[in-house]
Length: 329
Image (cartoon, rainbow, N blue to C red; front, top):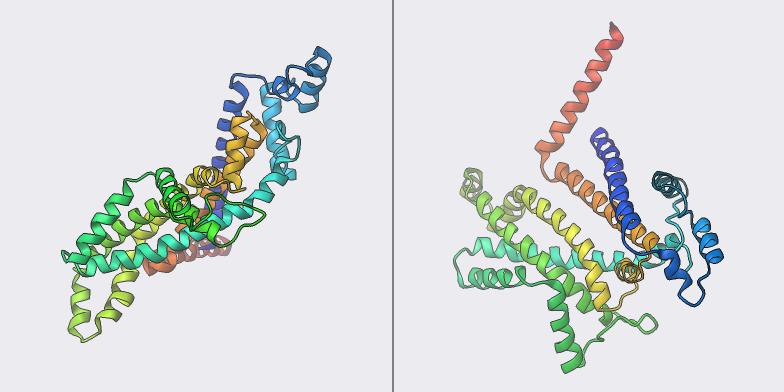
């Protein structure tokens, strides 16, 4: 198992390098000159332009800039200096990360807490009124963009009812400030997980060993929790992993709508100001987050399905036996 995790972590390195290369190329070849943007039209002189361009390292060839950026990221954790705010991008991301982390974590908890039970109930009560209601509601929210639903929440609960704050005020933020961002971010993902949970439970619940468990007199609750759910979680985990990537990416828009000081809002501000170091740093952090989430989902497979865990253990035992045989020779 440890060998598999190490292998997946090593595979993350070329993925991250590829992401850095793509984003760096886009930033390098994008139209416009960040030095002119920083100086402005009033403070522009040729001497200032040349000096600032040299200070930022923009007068160097492309591959030199790319290699210097990679070296600074992996050895110092330095994403460069913001063109717009003239501060460290790494420090700004560290300051914004807790808000994005909380938003994503709360959204994941809400998504799983509602989608799993609702999907199981819909499958157990197939073709009932409850199943039809859950199916219609999930289909409706599955096709709804989260940013549009966020605007509807603001209009209804903030403008009309005045129950919840329309934006996140950092100085006076309370638990109410998190309700609409979390709900709007998790809702579309929740619908997808619910539908997959229903389909997976329906497939497992028709298996012969489920009928055998019921014939032995095991209670329906124990059949569902101990036999059905554990075997139905593998495809559900796959969808949850995919939706986690969507939650991480969707937080960019949601944070902007609710004015939350997270990485998403910082990234949108950087895009507006053509702040390429900030854009590169945010994209890299989000990419690493998605890679880590996918790794955690793959590791969870082994704990949910004993067959997968046994497969990894057998591969590890075969590797040790081979090494012992080679040493004996």
